[in-house]
Image: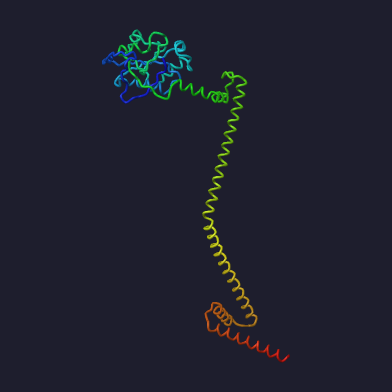
Length: 332
């Protein structure tokens, strides 16, 4: 007998034909009381596959079903199937905490017979339809009898989960689980590990952690390099725009600074002229007239006067040159 593991189907449970080819007609369920359905197994390391099979058995007759679950003791289980991880009491207690179970029958028999069915008033036995070799030698299939008498209800197995699968996962990663428990305070004696094996496992674990750290650092360096590349590409794509913007701002700043310097020099010149006129005894009207003339001249408000001024200057320069030339001839 093996663990009971099953899966829910849309149409619930179906009648299983006997593996021996029997065509017994399934008996009708009682109508004056709850239908008593029996499921059995080892239920070691109780998992959701177990729970689903029990759910199917409980819902075999949705209106009114009383589910009894039988679980073999350690002696029977170890004799016919092998060593279990959990003790019988632990397996019984796991079943009692499953919401689909109404009653747990400890010390269940390996093979169900008529005497057991009558004792517990069992109407149907629920299990998947695969034939289970009878290790006790009583028959070819553990459920051969109930199939022949038409009192068998088929459940569906849940693929991908079983007690054997869970044990295989632990065996596969044995060293990691040993180190896990050593790190949690268990001694090597508790785990049945020799002194040499413990030291070897610890060295291997340190090497593994070192490899993980190196890999982590490599990933960080890779991220930094990628960031630098992105920034470089961004700079290349936007360099012209940034330089043009900087030059525009710089030119505007220089223009403002030049304007401020010119204004400052003009203000100082006006103050100097004003001081000179005051020293020469000129009144404010003359000073105001000077300001007007200065600003008019500076702003280019009277073009004719400017042109006349420049013409007179040119005449003076020509007369000066003529005088110089005449003096030079006389000296000769």
